[in-house]
Length: 85
Image (cartoon, rainbow, N blue to C red):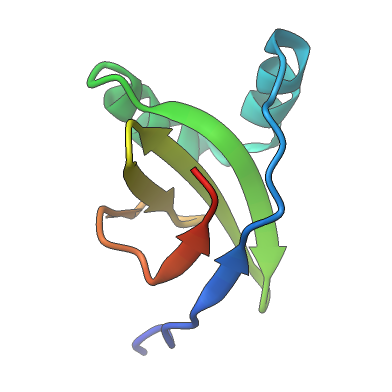
């Protein structure tokens, strides 16, 4: 079954602190932790996690690039989302 693509407005942004990062990391699924770990080696950092439409996505950024990791650990390097960078 193909997952429906939803455009998501993620423009509410706040800079996470070091403590927030640890808290965010703990909220990731195991699959998301593996995927996020591989992306951090390329300079990506975990910015926030959002739950919508029964999904749990992690949003990472590197410069102006945005990456989304699904609950199952799938990395989307061209997500259809709007963020304030």
